[in-house]
Image (cartoon, rainbow, N blue to C red; front, side, top):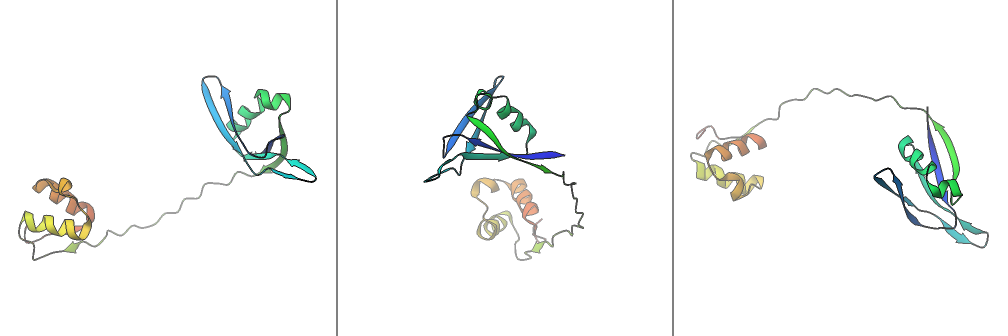
Length: 140
């Protein structure tokens, strides 16, 4: 079981707080606070990440009371769902009228957004054509 914990930064309606743990800095954005006739609602930060919870709960702000735990909800771990699909190979588009590298280069630039730099030589033209699923049977 893990917990969704919501922390409030007392006296702040919005705050980007920096916490240090060892040599690592963590920045959490506390948002959603408000000021009304009833008083100040603290800016909030919610997380399920136990590491983040540990960083906050061991901070000087939490220990001094500037940050308070407002809510703790037990949440069930959801099992990972894997969906297996059968991938069908994409049908290659065939250009029978292309008979040389220059014609292939022009088709790839015009219809597939290739740049001149991507199509410097015959090998790069063939590689790009393979990548986008194009076949030039009269040339290749």
